Image (cartoon, rainbow, N blue to C red; front, side):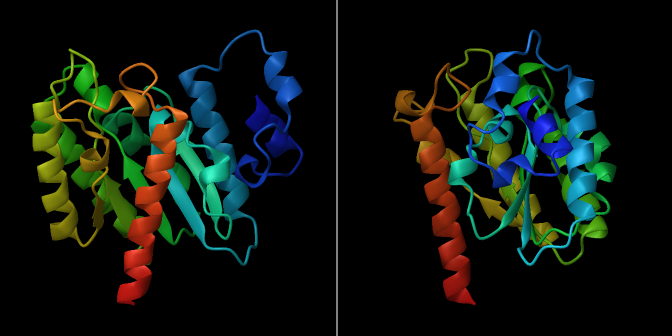
Length: 230
């Protein structure tokens, strides 16, 4: 609701302080449905597509981990479009890609797969869908840099971390083979038992403030390496 209020005011929420339109959220009686989220994100994409800006556009594409990425941890010199939806799967993200067709991003950060695993999807299905996401984004935005981020470890007994590690190895290979980049977050978040470090999570899957701070650090280190190599 905060984001919708910002959009109606002609603003993008990623360019506003985190407490903007807080009274709208406080007065909300129910949480938006998935379809309402998708509609809102499509509206934000359309708004960005129709806006002239001298800032490079970066897109976060994924599930709740991307959705709740703190605005104040996004690089301020860039324009950010957050396209994360809670509970989203690789299948749903594929269905949403046309909503990004008219945007002109310089970078697209993709993170998905943990919800697929919760629903019992196979490794092959997840990797194949990520490959399709990369291929479609490259066709849609040939000048954009596609960054595939690893699936994070969890503390959920329903999601084997050994399986996540195996999928990540495959994601790294398909990213390299496709001309995309791969960002290894798993190694920064995993403990000696193969689970996500407890300080980085609120419930075994979702991230704490410290978790997002570490994600930001990995972002910045990766961008610094790219800048140095150029």
